[in-house]
Image (cartoon, rainbow, N blue to C red; front, side):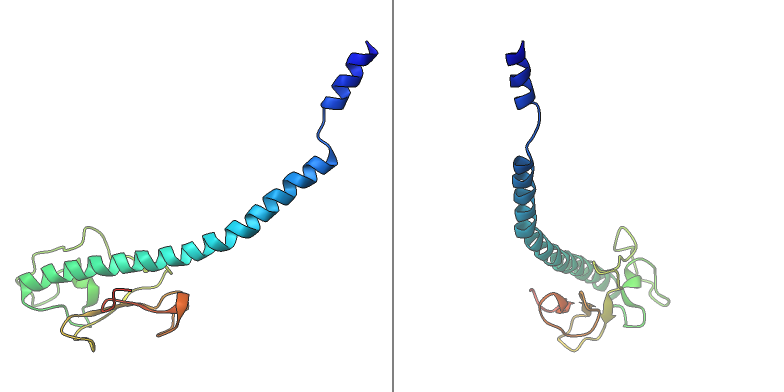
Length: 146
């Protein structure tokens, strides 16, 4: 009977060294994976902003087909959801839901006529909320594909 008790007590628990090894492995995994995941989050927000801007540009194209012109800066993207005054050819809404904020929680900026061609300009000021910037702070704009 003494032999069975010795075997059971020796196999019953987890040693401190085993716990430290597991905690160390988890910490190393978190240290290696967390920075990569954070970088992907910033990249995902930029990709999502680009997709939303492309969606707005498509809707603006349909708006122009119906009305003959793009909405003025003062009217903005709101014209894709609600009929602007003095626009009888408006056949919207051109978007299925209200204009969302950009992935950083700020409104998209809209300008027409734009400075970069005949099409309107749509801008997300990205992570820093200021014009320009580099990396994660670089603006996401309608006239550049990346």
